[in-house]
Image (cartoon, rainbow, N blue to C red):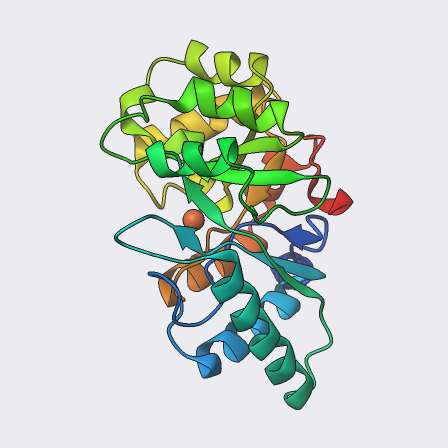
Length: 245
Ligand SMILES: [Fe+2]
């Protein structure tokens, strides 16, 4: 009887307390995320079932690899909104970008080029997994000068920072908010990444949690997270800003 009750309770759990997912690669055929509109529709329905109320998609902008522009991304967003209507999906969807921090991005900031922000002027930035961006401090500084609020995507996934927790405080000190990936807490990206994510959670250094969803493997693991009581408990005390978006 008890196990039946527990099972029922667990399956009622979902991710609705997060409200908004602000990091994903669900717009079709723009980067290494989803490739077809059919997939986008399927994943959007799944995200709704997981409890999400709104999606902010963030295709990569990485010169020479993912040459996306605001115009390309916003045009694809309109196509997706049309497809949502045709498929009776009643969920707001917006688009921004995940900007790779490098010389081109810094130039774009300094030249006042149009950047895709979301919410309260937030800009999602990332670095290579191989080495930190040489100009990261300058980029954060200049983004703030221009009135943006930078968010560093998945700080727990940069191997060169593992074991060096002071660096996370340094980012926050510079006015850069931190976004961890939901799946980092499951061990999906390995034990050291999980440990770093747990450190950030325990020290309440996390402002946003995103799915960073690219493919079915991520979706299946997110579904597992959604019904895991222990993982829920880990993040319920965080003062997340997802719901403000
Ligand atoms: Fe991402």
